[in-house]
Length: 284
Length: 313
Image (cartoon, rainbow over all chains, first blue to last red):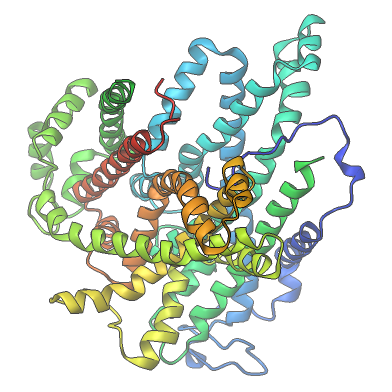
């Protein structure tokens, strides 16, 4: 419901990989690919260490040596932006992956077995959804203590619901199809029908949503770190860097501006992948 | 009448939901590692005080008994006491709630002022350059962290012009209005992209519907067609979207209040988290949750009245 809505039919027997890739999907993949490379090659690319301080040289303006200047304890901002890719990218990815796995599992169980399994899963989902999930996020991280582990647990607890609903809806829609009924008639096991027949066909929308969910996870992670509830210093993280720079907005504005631009660039890449996948799989 | 039956059923349905919500807020203190009494009193409290509170709050009782007691207190309007401010959580909430409501109200209005014209334009010029430009901008807007957008507004609007206060909420109505402008704009910028996207697709569906085709065949076109036939039919999905968005909106309000140091519920919550003021975090979470439940309910009731096709099941 948050996006354009599942109005189109996703399912078909045609093999989608034979169709040309949409331009935006390619562009998004290139952008995200660059970030993956930055994360992998950070030790070779980043000119300076991420945490080593150089107090006499603090809050320096951009120069040939420090391309984006230095922060309040003299660390090279450009290097920290690169090192932070190793933090934000994997955490953002996992913070969307775990809820996807849990939600898909529960949604598939609910749809396939129906009855009381469906009843229980749907009721729990309703309660979770009735919550202001992102505010509950703050409360839960508070309860569990700040940090990456709390963030991953919390994201999994609060955002599996949409995946469960997506997959449940899709499976209910396609389980009456002939190929599924044929598989049931052949006496295949529940596990085999679910994993080999239902999930691959119902999973396309999930994939589209997953790509855009990483953006949401990334921004939320940055926001929590901005509050001081996420990644803890001195580990470089983009949201925390924005927060640290905000005190120097009048004089060293680049401290806050650049990490935000980096988040937006990665987010744009992921959104392009999501939109591109949607276009590519929609009328496959 | 089926409609009132639906509403009665829907209202009755929120009772178990509210109990679930209260239970989840109650359960927060049980998922927290460590002694809940110590948690409530803070690290500096003496061992005797902790012991006293533990027996006073009867933490050794069965969980069900504790929950019934907690829920009973909540229904009587008792949300506990703040550690730092040493006053009732309800009085803190009463102080802070108006600011948050101002922010939410102004933010939603501004977001609609952005999204309705842009969404309409994109849908009416489908696949034209305006459509592509609007879709591109809204895609970018989705990826901008709200706290960063707020800082950019401070940097590029507040600092150079001096028109807007950097922090705080002021004392008079006109000061409130000036203080709330940039925070509300920040919230609006984070809400508008999703609204534009869903409004655009809803409108395209409407434009291709029989009703609009008929109106066109009768020679109705231009602004009259849009205002009389397209927009009214796209309002329903918009109400649903605003209701669905409300949870995200509250998170946005927390972020924006923290960015601009607005003295609302959100910034209070962040301060309470930093100060480990447990009762305040619980109380504000509960207020936000009740707001979400109430708005979902109101949206459903509104839809039942506006749209005769709503499932009355």
